[in-house]
Structures are given as structure tokens and as C-alpha cells.
Length: 233
Image (cartoon, rainbow, N blue to C red; front, side, top):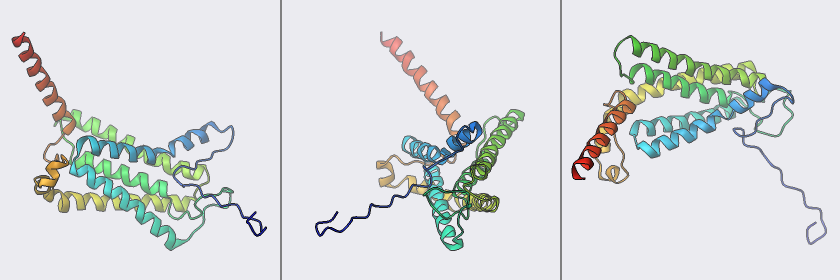
């Protein structure tokens, strides 16, 4: 009670939509889907770690696209003002149109598909086509599973999931085109700025496969240093 003797109302608590996950008790598939629903958080952590470790400008713009996609979903939900399915009797974000998880995953996955198809090159023969096809199918499968899980767990209607998937995929295409043709030409001059050198920002876009490039150069440098150490002994 307050000092004047009046009763104090307890505060209302609201759950973050990305972290509040429920599934039917005893439903093993539902539990698996509930765990998979945490994928957006894992992706966000991986992106942040990747940027901090590599300081690549393309990774930065990809991360900005993820943020813009999330903001777009927020305003679309406020515009449509459509509730989630009536079966959900929990306290969390009430609005459900379009599905945030579906839009998020389809944006990330379609962008990665485009990146794999048009920017990632290594072998240059049949082997490259095979592993690219595998990556593309696996990536799109993850997006499809996320969309299905939101309906299975009754967090969204089919319509909310479909529109979330379409919006995320279309925005991924738009953001990839913007990055490829409008932003990429500015990477090199930006990387040469003094402040970029201070923060170790770099442009890796001219390198077709940065992982292979780093592997080869790191292995070669390590071999040279070991050879030099043996001579000095």
C-alpha cells in the first residue's frame, strides 16, 4: 500500500516477442520448433561477431539491412493492426501481421542465396555448382521451417506467415541490389578514410571467396615463419 493507505497496483510485464517461446507440453516436434524460433537471435549474434572479427563493410551493410527489415516489420504491424490467432492465451506482442520471424528469416536466407549465387566464387567448375546448390537448398529450407513453425505453434495465421515471408524475400532482393550496385562502389574509398583505418574497416568485395583467401594466405604466412624460425635455430 501507499502511504495514504491506497492499494498499489502491481506492474504489468510484457515479454519480448523474440525470446518468449511456448510449445504444447509433451510435443517433441513443437519443442524442436520452439528452439528453432530462437534462430533470429543466433543470427544476430553471429553477424555481430563476424563484423567485429572481420570489420568488412559488406557485412556491415548486411547487418544494417537486417535492422531496417525489422523496423519495416514494426511499422507494418502498426499499420495493419491485426491480432495474432485467438488460440494464443499468453501475454506477449499482440500484433501478428506480418510475422516477424518469417520476415526476418526470409530476408536473411534470400539475401544469402543471392550472395552465394552472384558474389561467392571459388572452384569455377561443376564442384562449385554442387556446393552452391546445397547451400541454397539448405538456406531456403531453414526459412521454410521457420514459417511453418510459426503456424504450427499457433503464433501466427497462415496469411500472416505468407505475407511476412513475401515481404522479407522481396526486401532481401531490393537490399541486395542496393548493396551490389549503389553501396559497393563506395566501399573502397570509405575503407581508405583515416577513421576507417583506425577502426580496421576494410573492403573484401573484390575477393571472390574471403574464407579461401584467408586460409591460403594464413597457411602460407605460417609456413614462411616456421621456415624462418628453423633457419634461426
